[in-house]
Image (tube, rainbow, N blue to C red; front, side, top):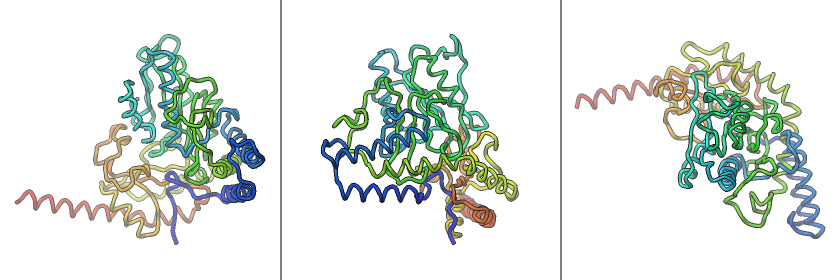
Length: 401
């Protein structure tokens, strides 16, 4: 038996999404057409795409004309951050500042290199001990003095993909707007458990990835408010408001629409069930293992644990041998043993930032899955301690030589 507890990395394809994808592919095979074509096949593909766009907009609290289909949240983040920042600088040459939280996924954080090459200034907000972004002192009716007149764009994730903490996105967006900038949010991890409304959050841009909600990998959405300036690096045939050119994946869009619709319908019941599973897990942790962050400030579906070992590779290997899939952090860091920058930003030591584990829940997670994890946890910790002991002996021998 295998137990999957890495839903924050990717969650299994939902049956409704598979059905929608299969149906769309069959329809396109029977009546082929590019959505940009004027013939009957093209018109049918366009209707399918528009229907999917309308469903996605409804699920995300957006207008249908604000939905731009992409290849996933990573592309949506890159477009949302850099295209909007370029557009703001093009409108007002003084706006050279991009501000991001210290909890961003690499899809946002690594835009720093692109921004620096293009002459933007990049500012990272501090993270407090609870894993929440610290916002600057404000003035001038709410605009931070260091941002006023200079801010092009601010980006803040709604739920940290690594530690699960919920961020003050609506307040951050208000500060960004008071400074004259545009507000972007990566909402990929938030949708299964939080009421995510593009309009209510007061955002200009929002990124969502399909495989985080049970749609296929390779499809996502950038929600972009109409009228905001955006200078894209993806010119082409003018697709998706000329922001993301390329023939759209109609079947993928249909699958994403179906998955999002189902996730939103199940959100309250899943959030309550995930909270109960989380509470059960935290109540039965062995000595020396604790939650890295406070429960009220976190997504119920992401449980970040601090372990009494700095050897996450041994811990993960032990879980893998027991048939349990978990992670030591963001999936984009898989295979690399290094301390968590986010945990270190919270004020923890490098050793503490190595000894972490992320357990993330999905709609199919059961109490038996949690019990299997709890049963395997002591042996996994012992594996980490054993590897530490071997490394310690090796270091002592090297010093003697």
